[in-house]
Length: 197
Image (cartoon, rainbow, N blue to C red):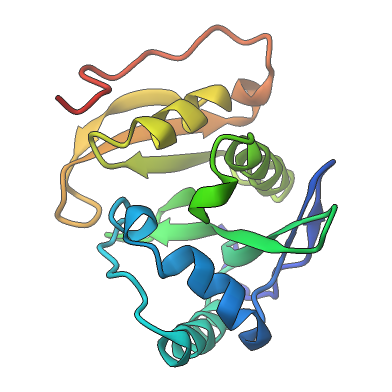
């Protein structure tokens, strides 16, 4: 990753626009991060955002954090093109320790699940990251989060193992390289016990 900072620019797909978060997005963001069923899977741990004031503060913190992130890291609001409604958030963030690995992630409001938006978001961010000379990106998934594991596999990510090095929590690690975005690439290795049982 580059050491210079930058401001995330919008990325557009067939159905979505990924753009920087605005403080005015607080209600839409709360509709995502105010749901325990969304935040329970996040790493590092994140409690459900309790109210609009807390969400505004968090958006301000993300904006300040973004001013210090090296390119191409950042946070984006996921906006649906048909109605301009913000339905989630997406990230490319350095993983601790050492900030050497770049994590890709997404969070969608529950009523947007099951429509392929996470897959579309992941593909768009990954394609853009690779165009910025990133060689590989990672997704970290909590065991039992079958929905996230399916999304990363739908984007050609390969399971590389489990670790607790990133956030002190046991996580499944998936890796993606530019060639893996090819839909004709062989199916990725599956982690054991996807259901979390």
